[in-house]
Image 1 (cartoon, rainbow, N blue to C red):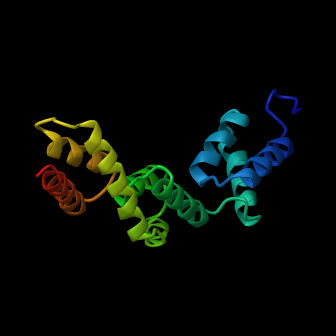
Image 2: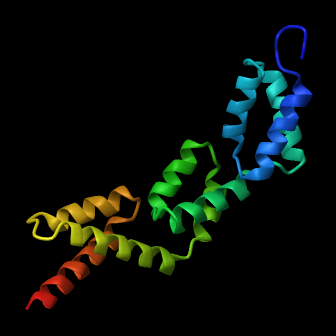
Length: 163
């Protein structure tokens, strides 16, 4: 330990290497951890951050791609929400656009359709079913045009099946 009560930068750096080797982190997340560990010493935190970047432990482009892929396929988020969340993490527009381009649109649409079908079943005889389905899908980060068409299709299919 350093004599002034701060953690040893070498130990902090090793800890960050371990964290970054387990999963992807963006610069913003690691900077917060560094500042906490170094008790607010911005200069030292920036030096350690630069070292982690040069050693390829941190790469915002790689992080954005992994984040977009996971949120799209696992959480069922749409591009709008993913873009917003990556912007909030300080990821560049270029990295965000590249990550969103990697998302399989057909797979994302299929995921949305399944989510909407499940939600529609839970809203069985609700007179505001269409509105609630649209609001649900929009909150997941999908575009209005895509959502509207899909909800209309689901409602049409339900009405067709009940005849």
